[in-house]
Image (cartoon, rainbow, N blue to C red; front, side, top):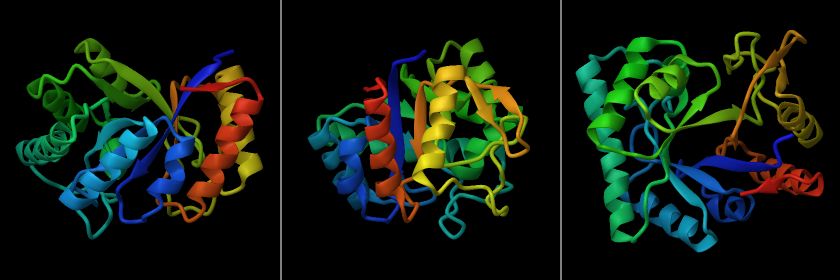
Length: 245
């Protein structure tokens, strides 16, 4: 059984709950202007991460604040490449000023979901990582298109699973348009995560158990109950012998 795990959260998205979340996470994904966030928010949450010793990641998105990056946007690959690259560079500039370093990149929302299944979108992200010469980790779903492409391009990865989302049998996430997309109960969330840790299987929305691997688990920071869910999950994992690092 895996006994050492990373817990991450998406932050800097205008919710303002970062100071409550930081003691219970070990890495964070900072919105860098695509779906949310600006220079001021990046500075604020980077300093909080520094205070709590939380690893910092860039959280680029389709450039679409109106839809919070959760809608796929039709745009030329070169335009998407430029947007993602600039978002990451904006955060790197902030981190340089704060004497911090970037630990990872995790795409957001529709960009993340598309990269899991679409070679064209995945390739754009891979090319950004190569262009910036970022020998850092890329957070990716297990057995996804972008995971396989990252490995082929010798880009370090961490497999990510979602503590607060239900899965389809193909390991895609249940659409947020469906009532069962989100996991909102702390006990259900713990069982969901602990099963993935102990058995390397996830119970899908149809009741099947599908093989999965995860090095890091995400709880979305924009959830109204994010603090209660993350604190309960972290504390229960620790009490069950899981080291959160």
